Length: 237
Length: 237
Image 1 (spheres, rainbow over the protein chains, first blue to last red):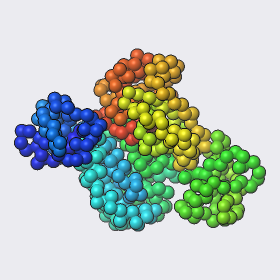
Image 2: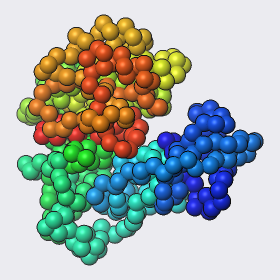
Image 3: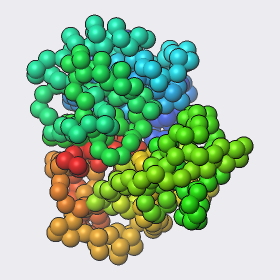
Image 4: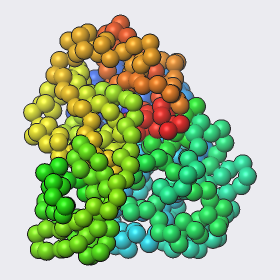
């Protein structure tokens, strides 16, 4: 947690109050906060401030804002990922948010076990987003969309996102074209499930405007591929 | 698991045998292997082959090699990481190995809890390496070294690794110099603990030949920073 995210309603008066148990525990256990310390605070969907701790009680910490700080910019990327195993979902969402993905889309694919769509973790996306924002020092949640049917998504939704100036790249091991790097334009990146997209899916993606590109000779796990690809694509930022 | 790694002793005769419970379970449960299927197999510290399954019994699978395949090249990078929380260690080692790090060094740092050095996971590094190699399709384990004292490591060991043609970059948020990208030379990358290196440590690293470079305005977790940095540095590979 590199900033504490507050709801706008918690920052309406001159003195702000942290009262969420998770945040208080972190601040007491890991940061060891004292009155007079400064603390970075973000207002969810709003600005970010350096604040000063003016009072600590058993179940709250009170702050006053000192000065505004810069909210980091998003990467101009829409990340489309085949829904991963529930165990991986939390980390994947957190990482995508921390890295600054502007929009995140979770889709079905042939090799995604249908049971994954029943995981209770899908009800907790907003919490995972909060964790990712607090890690990054960001305040603005990315847009998140879910599509449980592959074909209608690829044929009806995906083409609208793609243009000459904003291409879509699907990571695919069996192609000679390499994933680009140091791009200076927006784009869409599509990462398949464990085991990859099936040939029918790759063909449908290509038919609907995607470029199949390789990440090299090593097969990465989904959650490893995401930061690897974003580091590569946006290497000049 | 994208290849099955065998010990050289398992491949001395013409017919090779998979007998490890973990590998058999994976092949039966996730791959659903049948006699006649092809299977990618690597010989630990050796070559990689496409094989054919010629017999399946309750506690073994027998193969014959069909043709040699290319073992992916390593990245020309030494990765130095402050020892992470035990929970993260397995994933971090696996990822570093999967991504192709040539040499991995775990070091102590002020913000590394001393108890982390007692984790039983440190006795299982070889297993985590195997998992990383099997994910990547690689056969060659990277060198792994552990240094429990920061200062002697930075003063006596680190300078030997650094040269004009092989610089060392320490990821540090408070610098204007950016982490380079698309490099065509070997290098060393140093990633601090959660909360970062303390100023004394950064100063000592710089004094001993490291360049402090920034990864941008977002603070990444150690395990996210590793693939992000490697994707950025070696974006032309």
